[in-house]
Length: 178
Image (cartoon, rainbow, N blue to C red; front, side, top):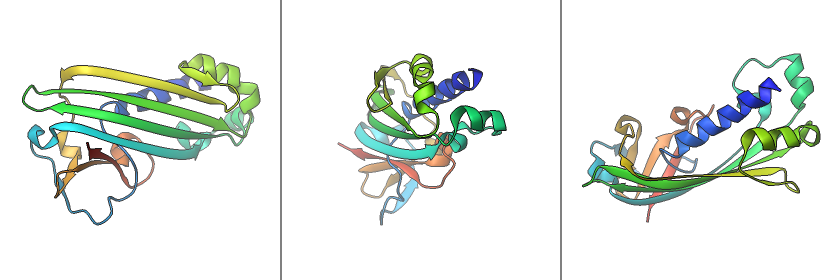
């Protein structure tokens, strides 16, 4: 089940990207956005969420073969992400927590469920075919790329383009200051 290992690695890699960045899709409404130019603009606690549903075919990102179609069928995955992001600009550190819940449905989920649980780890809910992963980090040196982040004119929201975070769509991941 090499494809499941690759899929599992992709999920974990995506989760690690989220553990370093931001929140929810949407355009940000009527806010006026500008580039973040200094870590001091990000000082404080930020919170956000993201919900994304897509087919395994689209989510896999690679070439889709007949073998893949037979293995996965028309399976979909819904990914819900909750994030808390804390920046201490005077210390130059960041901390936070990201919880990602993936819920699989359709296709060959019943046949593949045991393998998905084993490959992805986390806490599984067999009745929902969902897996929950939590990532925490504390007081690490701030390493985000300010070039991809924007802040609204009120200073209470930050955003990052979804494409910069590995999604195949336009829109933004938005965090709200707490």
